[in-house]
Image (tube, rainbow, N blue to C red):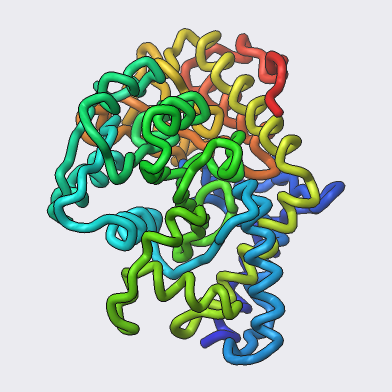
Length: 402
């Protein structure tokens, strides 16, 4: 089965007719009628990730695996910008955040959860399932928590933890995590700060240690350019000290993962091939340097958002993230737009969710080809709207972020 899987991956790579440029960057051949997967998860896999997934599997109870996994954990530290603990596990992003909450919090403990949309609503629901004392701040979809809102909540009493979503993927809205984290820690330094960084880490600035974050979670199928199925986490020393043993068979408990990560291994059979893919992605990000990648994300995002506005459209949300864009256009419904993009131009975007279903389209700005994909999609939308090339696709991106 492994051989069949490898052949499938390699044949797809050939059919897609990707070509490598400098530093491993791939350029999509626009002359081919190929499929462009540009949703905010899952993502198209770059060639260097596909090649890594096809490497021969090694046994995990060997020194060879320990050497490999130890180096990978160090790459994760660079990704999070931390000198503290990192680990990985099998699962979706949702499972990763829920595992962190399950492992770090106990029934009856007081926790503040900020609800900004579909995914942050899950953290509210799961906190109640864990029988925590939940203080919920609910924002309208598209709105974000401001740093000024932190003080009144923190003055209401001590919290064991705060659960924040960096970017709410259902709306594209992004909080000012640095300022909010500072305000929280200034009021309650011992309060644990848990961050869903699923749609931001690896795409926009994120400083785990400098921002005093205690636990952050990212999933492989976003800016890490990999198949879904693995989750990566960082834990502060304070968070690590909160972990308690339950049972060796309790695979929701991060205590087991952290204990085995200290041994450069897994508490069970790891997804070695998926870890190879993560290694290829993190090595690419290290080679490019994160500030350069963050700036590339910003440029692609600014170009696309400016193009949507020039087409008469609207970028959704009060504080849109650089990592993705949620938008609407005049004279065409979101469903009609998504259908035309996929059927005519073979471009796959995501639609709105919950109350925004049928009202929005959502596009990610991850990966080496993000800027070219932004231009490609703007050209396609231009044709769908019948503007006949009136929208320039070489719009300058304002400034840069580092």
